[in-house]
Image (cartoon, rainbow, N blue to C red):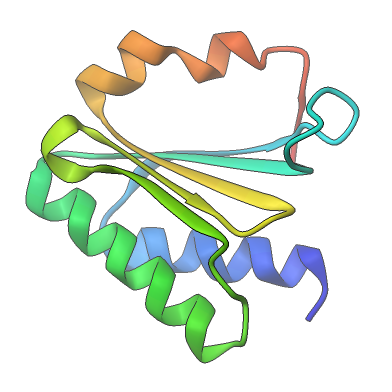
Length: 110
């Protein structure tokens, strides 16, 4: 599966669970960690977990394997590392606090 298809699959999973303010950033020239960051917000802890579960399930079903998972819904932030794509799932408060949208402002929006 091509990277563009993987990005769409992940974003669709987030949208399926009512994720909002989804942003896709090309960080390939800016970060040694990943090529793409996907940043999404959810309204509450249960929604964050549902978004995370949906992404993990769709990726697993399409043989996109999780390298590492960090964070917890209780903390308002979950990170899913799929090697060349990193997914950040935030509560609104934590997204504002970490402000990755600003930190990675030089990245091209996909």
